[in-house]
Length: 81
Image 1 (tube, one colour):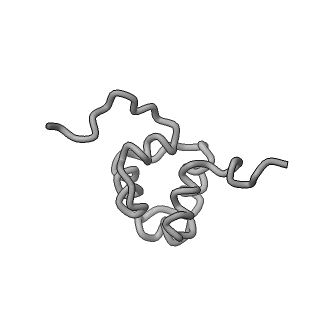
Image 2 (cartoon, rainbow, N blue to C red):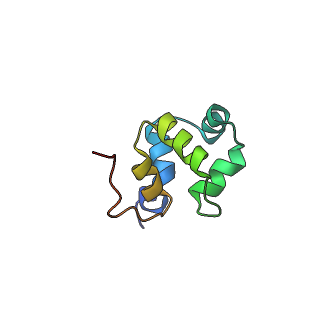
């Protein structure tokens, strides 16, 4: 039997690492618990402003959030020089 973490989405693992429930994260960024569920399960993608809010609340970069939700950020600079 596979390890349960292998079945969890990257976004869910980030949320759990931040010790937040879906409901709590949703309250913090102004969306429903269902919306968080949909993002974690690849049903929908967050708008860019919500992705930024996710990064802020989870304490990770926007690139990390994009990668976690399946957006390829290869070659995108982390910040302008």
